[in-house]
Length: 190
Image 1 (cartoon, one colour):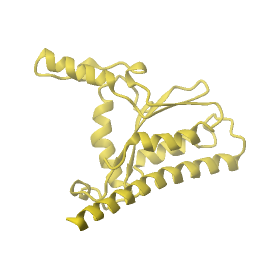
Image 2 (cartoon, rainbow, N blue to C red):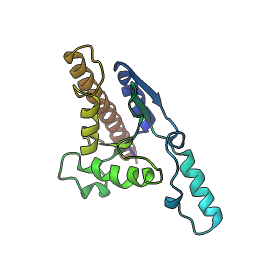
Image 3 (cartoon, rainbow, N blue to C red):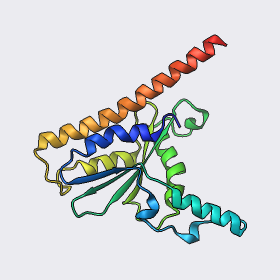
């Protein structure tokens, strides 16, 4: 993890609240919206099973968003660093590191709930501002013209989409540059 997802969620939260008829919340508990699938909870003994069940019940998403009378969607953000050994697997494609991290971290977490993947989604980013394929699809679905949202104008919809993407990328890149700067400062003093 490069930066805390709470820092990443708070800035776009302000932009998402500007979407007409959108209800947006930070850090909703997944268990309040989707039941835990007891068949997916494992444990070698009853105590370990109970601990894993309790952990699943405490899981939180980063943002919940609902448009009018549509189904509530929970969004779980994750950021992967492109400068690690584990990133060499998918480093050749744009957003490949984010795709890999999103699938390996968020999908197992969400599999413990009885939820349609359309409504409990991970959004993967990499440390240089790249998006996973599913993240691009989600952003496009939120800001598409026929999404059922009564947009003030087409220009406003496009502006808000570009502003949201730019904000997320800026937060990730700024935090990444700051961390790399600190790393070099520490390495130079040793």
